Length: 611
Image (cartoon, rainbow, N blue to C red; front, side, top):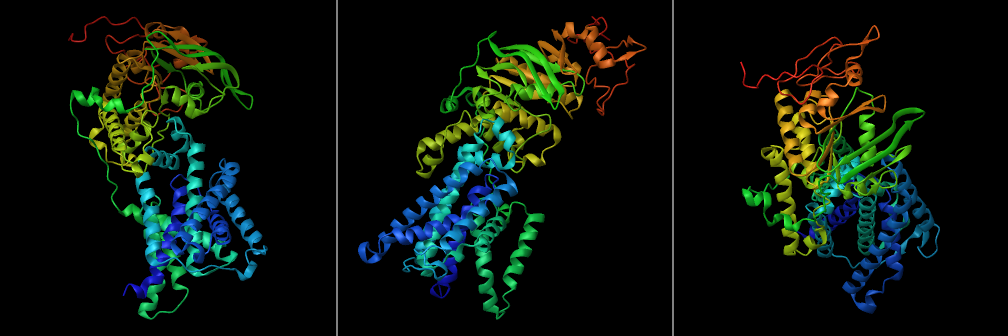
């Protein structure tokens, strides 16, 4: 019975291996169509250079051919990848497709390949060999999935900017994924050649590339079994046709196209997304969980001592087409401070923290953050120095669970485990467990331990904001930048967040955060900086800021050229010009919570428990 289906089962294995070459880059968010080119170069190179089976025997000949093919495929991927890794989406697809077609045309017009007639290759590959090769490839991607490297690729796929801010070198990881795709495609090319007996350049044409991509997409790029599921469906449909006596050749492409449409519309993760994704949340172990030896397996960084300079900005400015978003900012942040950055919408707050975190290069002036010069340093290296942040609009890895999001956040302090996981070394398990415990601590710190297994996209907006903070904490930062962390939170949630920020500062963390909830800022910060029209208009303690006329005017405006009097609210005093849903009218006077850090009116000295 098995021999009767030996050929289709062999093609299931070959199709899955080819689909894995697409999976290797899809998991990193790349759309490449160059794998057919890698496979063809590898197949013809191996057929021409490998010794014959009469010289060394069948199995050694095949192994040598595989080694040659995978090496050639990987080298071709490096040659193509270096100049194209800055491309994204359809542009990368077009560039790689052009490479594959160029390779096909060259091979088609070369004498040593036999041209259109093809090149004869002995049949050595058997069903068992094909499935053994597939098992090795599947094992590679299985062990990669739970490693630091695998999580980094998934993070890049979900949100490249957030991945960079977590300290992930996106360019290096994308190139590594591309080289893996080249090697796997090379393996497919050699196995295909040593099974079909006669290979021609047109065996690796555009149609072959599209079929490999469709197989990978239908199977799914969110789990390592995806390519196998896709290949099984693509290959077995014609066999089922023949078994039921239907010979219509259009059924297979029709069903494949229909399934692809269904997957894109209803299962963006492919067939593999129907399989549950297991999330392991380590159990709490009390004090040992907080301070235990799990930390010893994580990388350590030196944090600045209290009072040391963490960030120094000198005449920092940013222009966009002549518009000064930020100009002449002089600011120094010292270790242990909680610095609040407030101001009306459009004042340049987010632009400023984007420059501090390395996302945006300054147009003028200079800045040094944790010893790193901003503007000439890639984002991931700024993060490596000890800067971690959240974003104004949540940038979570939506298809990953809350725990997996925080694990990615610990990229910089966790150790590489992929190669050790391939060998099942105990040290890899210890390091992965340490990373899990670190992620669990961060989730518990923000109150999300019970949501560890929930996808980030399924969390409430407030929980998503807290998850971003947990992810930022996972890297053990020296400087934590929070961009409107209380946005969308009610007053109870904002109060809890304020308590959390103060507790983090008590642990020695330096915090710089933007917030429109001015009452929360005044109660939380040790120093407040006020921006308006891209310039610093005030800087000082919460008490000084609350009484500053320039701040009152910036927030409450003027009436008949006279400043409008008012007081900063408990809760949110939103920018009156920014269209915030909690806007406060210019003539509003809002009482301060008794004992608040500062007010625009003289503070009420009535005790909190007075009636």
